[in-house]
Length: 435
Ligand code: NMX
Ligand code: MLT
Image (tube, rainbow, N blue to C red):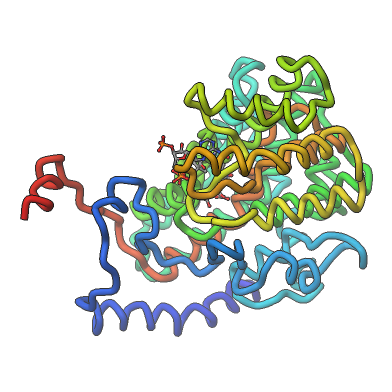
């Protein structure tokens, strides 16, 4: 057993025991009251999941194992003193709960570089069998499923493995999958947007730097942006659609590929990860319809009001949990101000930030009028030359693998059972208020 797995097992053993004890000794303790409104409007606020990787505070935003993004910018290993934290580090932190050393990060980076080298050729054949204009998320998800021929998880199940050991083949599958996603994402990007002119991986690079390199954006700044992007999109506790879907499918003891593909199908929805593409669509339509690349705040306000009047949402704004500006928005704005202040898309994103919250507040129904992570990520990528916005949700997905797949390893460590909530028909709900 390698040192990381050994460490994980040592850390997990007492936690697994605590979970068993809670279920056994306090299984009947009532921990929460639930309202009709919560059940009928997306189960918001109902605690229904056990997740250790990160926690979302409505006012403050995300903390990964207790650390805010700004704290992690200081505490996680970086490639350069003035650079961004490495995704390998946040993976290690989410997995073990401990801050990694430079050596730990190197170990993860080397593991991923090695495991990325052996993607079977049929995975690329599956991508090539799809029309070139199939959305990149369709290509991404097909490739993920195609990679499941590699899964040891099902084989372990068939050999009659003790269920407390399932975390081990899950860990192996997760490490393979995370390692290979940048190669797959870059392959799809070059296939769709660069005439299939592919760029080989550079195993000397880190995971995110290599992704930027294989996409053909190999300036130092683009690599720094990719590291930051991969860190901040990695996890948002357990209830978001991509994490929840991955976890739910995993609860049937589906292998990591099936489980992650389920999560990615959820990420492809416009109210979740696809919002990063829709923001760019909305911005460009706004510019086209107003007839200028530099609209005034007054013009943006009118356009936003028209969007709402048509019964549509303004992508990049609002959140199911957050009630303040998403710190992931702010950290991207800080990055833009450091490297590319005053570029047209960043200026436009700032103007929108000045007017859209007031427009949303004036509807009287939007719970959170502030920008989320997607409000600026596309403007930032575009400003660094990655302007093919149909790839954006794939990039979100590559990053999200770090969190949801770590959660999946912990699900198997905890030995969580199959998930099966109760449903009721309308009559039942109406009967509840009659009494
Ligand atoms: N523009 C217009 N209307 C909105 C917006 C928005 N950005 N956000 C919420 N509303 C509406 C919402 O559609 C609902 O209307 P109705 O009652 O007529 O159905 C009402 O306000 C109340 O919704 P909330 O309770 O505030 O939001 P909810 O928790 O249901 O949904 C989102 C959260 C994120 C789905 C919602 O804010 C939204 O659709 N935002 C735009 C899409 C987006 O940016 N998604 C990305 C989220 C982050 N991510 O990366 O996943
Ligand atoms: C996410 O990053 O998953 C989104 O902000 C959505 C969420 O947390 O519900």
